[in-house]
Image 1 (cartoon, rainbow, N blue to C red):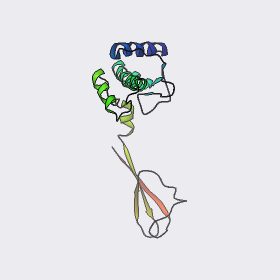
Image 2: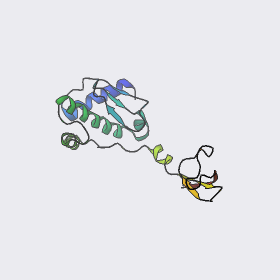
Image 3: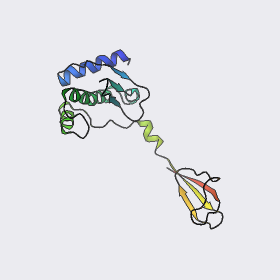
Image 4: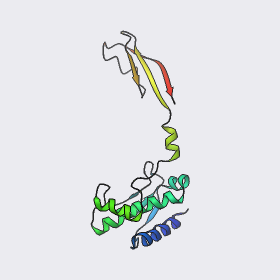
Length: 157
């Protein structure tokens, strides 16, 4: 799907679902990572994450567009356009838009494996379990100020 096709789809959904025209720009933003789309308050434009269309299809894309159009139309009407507002929640139900977008499949795979790093003090033998690595030349044991060494790394699946 190209930018022009996305613009036409957003305009069509706006008229069909909301009965109002979409008078601004809708475009794919490749920098979006953790969200399906966003409505920009200053310009009234809508940005969409292309990965959601590529990986989850047109149905998910339409849900994201409807969600962002809820922000758009409520903001222009001067009503509550934020996720916490009742106007926003009611309009989502009316048009059948999701409150949150689905998680991308590749995101699930990244977080499925976890690792634990084990460090031990060379002086008092106290062990530390950490998710993130420690710079052993910079940090010392909290109990006796002894030198830390990495014992092993455990990978959980």
